[in-house]
Image (tube, rainbow, N blue to C red; front, side, top):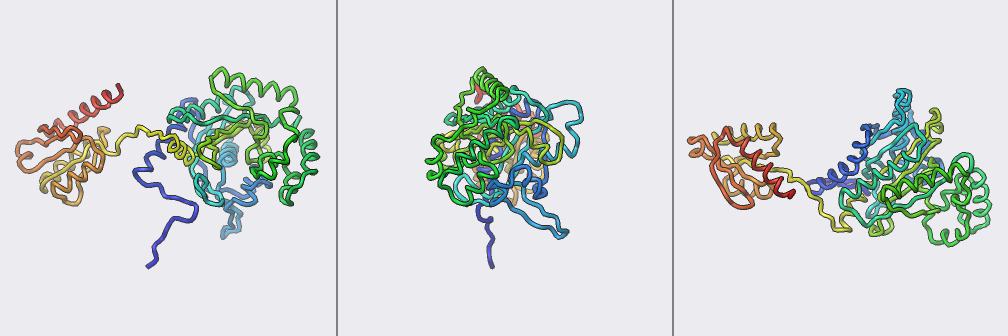
Length: 428
């Protein structure tokens, strides 16, 4: 009979590796939660038009990479290729912007889907943590989000990454620059698809990674040289705030990222140890996106950080996360009466906040102790008929090998005390 495998370009997360992914998600989200961002969760699929309008019809995401399908009812839907458009749609639908407390600050975590050529660091199913601040135009907000992302990476122990920063102007100064850039690009030797892009969104040509294109971009006009005074002052304030917060950054005039909705502040975190897939995440300001998808004018800014790429960066730097063991106590009963007694103790331990497991399946002592060691538990709790007759269990420290009897009604308090003491010692 045929056996099934995960679809091409996807992966399964399984223990023990999955613990690292969970730790990365939590670390990247924690700074945003501390800054007042509330959790939002949106459907895994949306109307195709939401992404066509918001992300941009000329982007590779929409034209080549989106998983689109027609439902039995005739609705045109797509698996979400990114999070911002969905989160903004949800906020507008719920009228969060009318609650009188702007900006609306939201964070999220989930799976996203793009039909891409699978390679290390680029998958068709990938995980991101994102944060969006909706409804305020303030350079302090842009700086806040950059700092929160940087704090998340640093809390994990990452060091060898760089922050790239740019400004893409606004609706006042970008039109004139757009015409200037189009005039320059039309004179280049480019393929038909790229020439089409010149007419739709010429900024995206600057982001073309092909060497044959990049060579021709020497001397191309840069947005930074054509910013209006308001955008120039805004960007300079963001730079000042990052400098005050001791966040190093590099000005990158070609940074436009892959989505059409960005305005003004644009940023990206890159890790040179990851090769072609160097972007750990990024984001920027998207002041016109709300209007693009039918909402009011709501200047906003946000980012999305890749969990998969961050894990790869940790591997590249050989950073080992300090993960709590999945099990702290492993119960080993010897005999049916002991099984009943220790199962009750395990239940009490879990309710007291201690992670505990049980030797299921009636294993003998030797096999059960092997399972205890494999579980990563610090302590084994062993009991047989003689122990129960004395109303005790044997508590064994699996690191030192020391073993001592403990009264059954004192097991929970004793273990909580021992585990707390161990944690304190390790932290010192």
